[in-house]
Image (tube, rainbow, N blue to C red; front, side, top):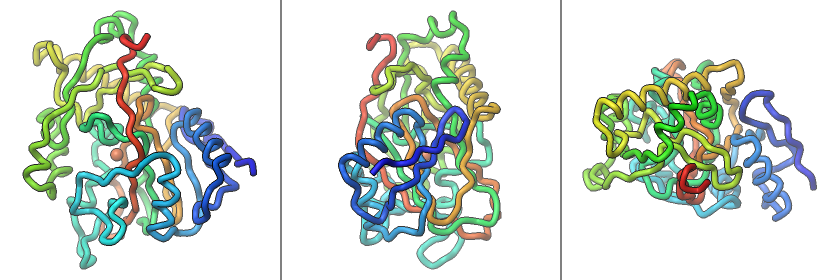
Length: 299
Ligand SMILES: [Fe+2]
């Protein structure tokens, strides 16, 4: 069976048709989806709502699933799933949950998932169970484009730099505190990790900005002022890519599944612009692991 690939016409994104996510996939189909994933960075699958185990069985085709650090949001019987949802177990509005995956300030929200870990997850899958009547789009920025638009002298200045990444301890971005509101103290005290500021995607070989405004604390081995100066420039370029005419943002429908790349080359951020009294409930899986390579070292 050959899958159908319908590109968005934007920097990133394609809808995959001809795949029933509720049924086992053949190795051939998985290989075709991996090829499309490499080329388009975000894949959309539309269909009916999936049972929790069916969503896990689909996701694990692309790598071992990792239990999310946010244990408070894990599915009660299928721990490979973590909820992105704005209600608690009793159906009451939960702002800590509502803030997961979306932000009121798009420029401050761009990131790739699990960049506070080493290695970060390869991919993220998200499946929509309930969605509000408007808003809550998930937006994507090409971090390849963001890098390409940097001046040559600036690329030279940052090519060997590394940065520190930490969940919820980024004093440059106050909204990150909400991300750790329900974490136990030992998880909040996890050591920071370092990744290159400019990475090379492990499959495409293309350079991309890896530092992100949500999780990157500072650039290592430079002054605080220089770190801030460099990071603000990088984040301007990420935001410009994520709001350019070529950017793609996904307007969710119930039953949609997205899978996006976290290996470099792509960042995402959701809009917290929907009616908060309306339920927004999604399943999420963290797929595989992929060390972040420096572009300069790997060249
Ligand atoms: Fe995310």
